[in-house]
Length: 124
Image (cartoon, rainbow, N blue to C red):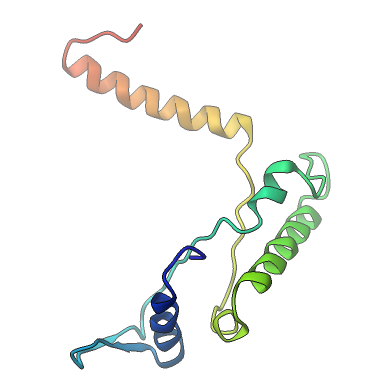
């Protein structure tokens, strides 16, 4: 979201405030029963570097709270309060572990193997 054009923020403010958006031709789009998901990379450097000292053996709730606090600090530095005050919740996803990444790779390799088998091709 931090890379979005400033006009996007104006549109989002209207959507988040009024639950609707009026386009340049006067058409109104209803957003009242809509979930808006925005993503950002703010705060990922600290998570990647392990600057907060995350460990798998530690208090994972406390680690998550510290990580979320750091990300929220970054959000406050980069976004105006009138935008952040309209966001209901921020969900911070921790960096994937090596084991989790390997599980994902295994899934994709298995899918690829099925596709190759269908074409009588071998992966070596």
